[in-house]
Length: 387
Ligand SMILES: [Zn+2]
Image (cartoon, rainbow, N blue to C red; front, side, top):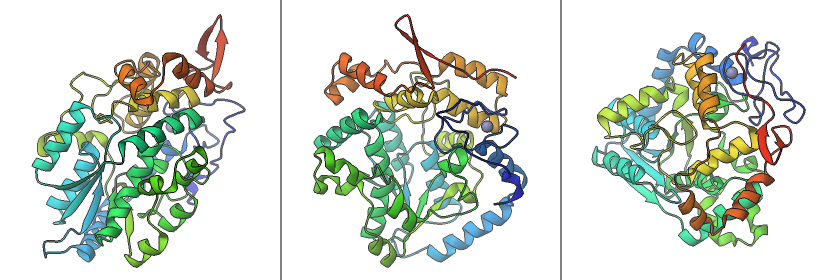
């Protein structure tokens, strides 16, 4: 690791809450390190991207990679996982138009699709892309979402499994060795910096260790049959190796910018923002629009870590100089942790849950470092403040 990332360490999240002096992120985000000056790892990585990465050289690396895999016999030569949202649309579009690739875009279905999510996927396909939609068994998926919500405080975990593993299964099935995921969330948004300079996902490591305690197989002990978990698991390592699957992050080759992707997707793939205006819990209108249940996914991060959707949006926009830290703080105070009321009824029906059980489940995941109860009301102990 270069000196740029010197002194980074974990500040025990159960001991105290510290906020980054440059953005609005706190040490409550799992695995996120801070340096001695109180700057978070994703802010340092952002600075590293601006000052140390030779993007022209990275572009040449991407050209060579595409040259190695491109096929001109009508076959697909790259799998691009995604929903037709701005980020995956950008990746697929650039690979096709700029690098002459022939992507098979692979979508892992939402639990409860929104109208705008469905429209964006249809517009994306119509704009010139092959797409394969993987919809897992609805009864199994619903049951799994309920179990992971109740036991782990995140209804979205089954989606996360499928989003990663289903495209890998398809790559093996159709013998397409190149898979292009979007960004490396660990380095971009907070987490381990171990792979800050690596283009590929270490599949061997991922298959062996990722989600160790919470692998899809973990839910067997909650009465889910292994055969029902098959769609959520990674293909066997031997199959990934025999197909020579390489899973790359586009963010390694191209300076990741959600706003740039939004501008491109509006013009070229028919992408439309949230027709209801901003998404609940934040001030933006262009991210994560596909699933009626994802409001609770973001809300539960706020419950567990005190980090809501506005914090995540503001943190990256501060790093990209779109807003200042003070503006970000005002937005966090205004929107973070807003209750996801818009699809509450659908969420309760989907979870087969009443309000009482929902509230009890939410309260179960409030960590004492983050929350205190005063006169029967839950309040954050601390919030990000201006310097
Ligand atoms: Zn920061």
